[in-house]
Length: 80
View 1 (cartoon, rainbow, N blue to C red):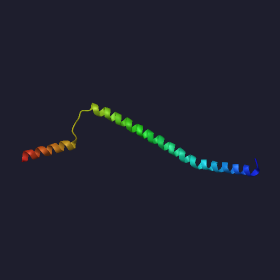
View 2: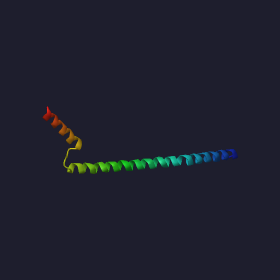
View 3: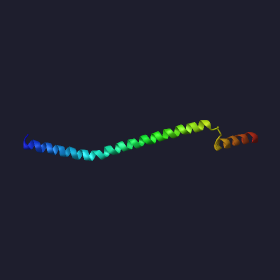
View 4: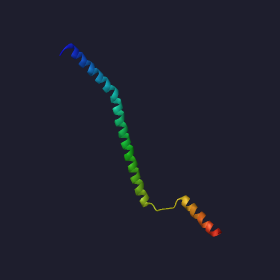
């Protein structure tokens, strides 16, 4: 191997090393974001499952808006 080839190989390795040092933090950040997103998604799914279990065991009570609307309807029927 000649001196020119050795210098070329060394320069290539230096450039590749700098490229890896610049790209590595981005790749680590992407992997971290995906892991956090997966954990959030799993937590939301677990919360939805527990809410579904709670809602199925709970008796159905009409909301305040439904109660108010029903009251308004009955008043209209009586007054007309």
